[in-house]
Length: 339
Image (cartoon, rainbow, N blue to C red):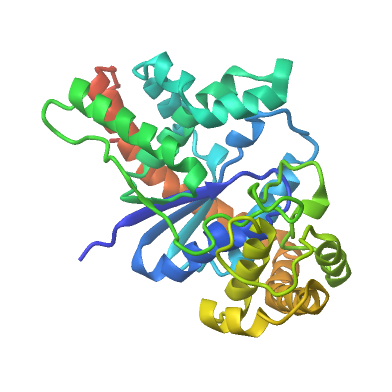
């Protein structure tokens, strides 16, 4: 039986953090044998906000190395860089021309990010969801691992696919509408400085997140200074204690213990007793990942070969879809050109 295809990616805007790992990449790793996987470094998305061109290439290699260090297996998964497959940009333009503008005006993330960027907001930020749709539809992905904040983008992808198929498919499904693959536990890892906000690379304070490459002394500092409350005794599912919920959930995910086990262990503890336990769990969980990363980043020729091969295989599939779309739209192609 043919495996279903999965596609996902992360922007190369700096070091990945614990939310990226527990909320997304760990799920990719655990399910990769079940699917045919394409994981890309979405560097085209990275320039929808002001960026530093001096660090983009290095950050791209860092993310690729972290994918592998986290456990992405090349036997089951293709790892590539988005901009190295030109079909992403071309399909985005073609889909732009059939996506109603009001669909993009309604995107919640655009409104939120536009407020933060102010006068620096670009057309690229508005068009971000169409680029994301092109990423997914190029590979005819069956499932897309997304967090809650990306569900609206995935619905837009489905709407664009349906619109294209209706207008140009002549009764055929030329672009496959994908479905979401959401991991129940850890889907939203929250900020260390505010348990009501998602952990994010865009937060100006580095103390708000645990980066995957943070050394032990920095992890200890961040947990020591993270926001808590004055209540003694720790427990899950208390709406007025979001930081307690977040830190207990992190401890549960990192140690592999059940919710009941963590609840029983931590019920009599104060924060002064619990924080060292969480710190140790973080350091020990990240140590093997960091060791694998250091070995990978020390061998740039190997990483470049992985990404070269990944871009080749991804490009083969993307070209097939792009050709189908171009033909459906009525574009001319010279005889004898690559099908």
